[in-house]
Amino acid sequence: LEFCFENNIILCRLPSHTSQPYDIGPFVPLKTAHRDQVERLNRGGVDTVGKGHFTSLYSPARERALNKRNILARESP
Image (cartoon, rainbow, N blue to C red; front, side, top):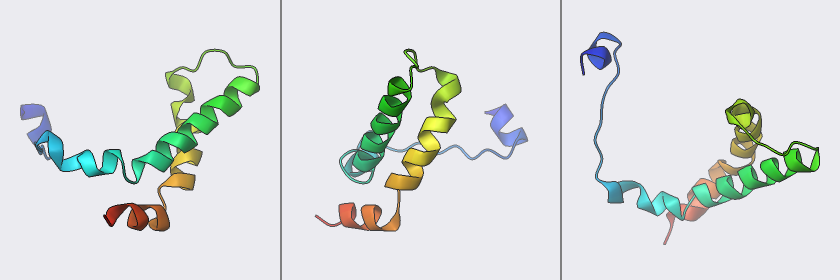
């Protein structure tokens, strides 16, 4: 806690169910887009995807999936 206070990090504890709607909402397209990026890398000859690949895979997936249309479309029941 002391580290957080010294570095202006705000801790917030949320009950587990508060983010569950997003598990089936806007993050579904993100998961699909990320999987597509991993498969693209595999087709390029990379057999092992490691931590070093995360940013190069996640950034385009996030750009493609977490847009206003997907987020708003997934919020309505």
